[in-house]
Amino acid sequence: MPEHASPVLVEATRGRLIESRHRGSAVVADAQGNIVAAWGDADLAVYPRSAIKPLQALALIETGAAKRFAVSAEEIALACASHDGEPEHVSRISAWLGRMGLGEADLECGAHAPTGAGAAEALIREGRAPSLIHNNCSGKHAGMLASARHLGEPTRGYIAPDHPAQQRLKRLLAEMSGADLAEAPTGVDGCGIPVYAMPLKGLARAMAGLARPDKGATFIARVTPVGVHSHDDSPARPDRFESARGEAARSVIAAMTRHPRLVSGQGRFDTEAMAEGAGLFVVKGGAEGMHAAAILGSGLGIALKIEDGAGRASAVVMAALLSRFAGVSLPAWREIPLRNVAGREVGVLRPSPALRA
Image 1 (tube, rainbow, N blue to C red):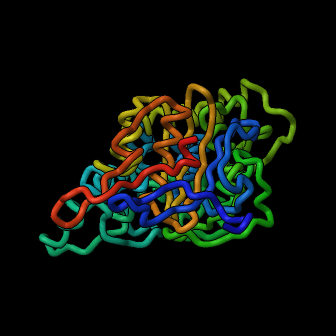
Image 2: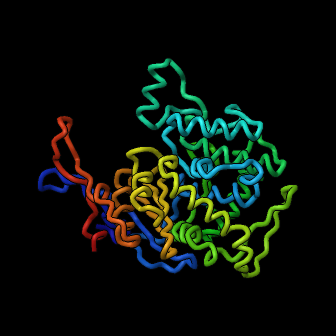
Image 3: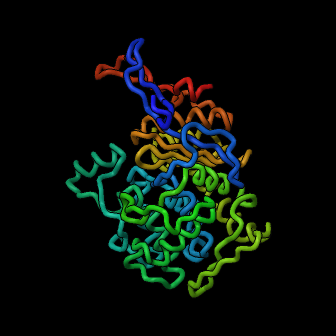
């Protein structure tokens, strides 16, 4: 194996043979950026994808938009979500947009079929096309529109990199991760917004900062009523965190832990893990094998990337790390049975010895 190769984190067995292997990197860090544990490359540049939605949702609250538009805990959970497009998701986002004087046509996320099989099948039976609100990122986009609406910014073109809404999120991510995003590689996410590469350890640090905002970023954005932004690079005072980021972090955590079903959907890892965790952590997955978590008691953050982008492997790794660092067993996810078309168990998806050590 080349020296630079990522370690095997997950094995897929068939009978007595390891048939497939998933390599990757994972980091556990605190809010100051101290690495507690790592597998593979902690400095690996990654696009966090949807794993950072809980961080992006902070802006909805920090700007005052959540208060102005009476955004509920359920709607904050949807701002953090990669939802299944079930009726409970769609109806809530539609009502939220309506309270802001906006509608589905204002979303710029694009439409796709619901990721929930039941919702997708219902549309087919009814002969209806998927709507923009069925997009699994529509709640996040509603949150961006809320901040823009509240601050008097244009709602059209809010996904453009130079729009104040995206610049605000870029600053927030830099603050939380400690990463310099000014020259970072930039791409376009699946839902159309900019995505910025950051070190895997920076994502872990940012998630730790979500759990313990009093220990995290050393400066915080302030937003005036007319949308003018300023920064103070002096050490942050606890009272400022209490009034801004701390309040926002508590709201995001409460929303996700109280309404895990809205964050993804029944039977999906993030929902089932947070339901079993009962308030001990928040966890969010993203495309291409990304996953991140914030452990509330210890104030640790977890970030992981599966090299081949396999989501089935990221859930196994995250379950193993949450078991180790949050004390939640998650047995249904730590070793997942692999079945043939007749339903017979023929193997398992399991953590590798490197991860179990």
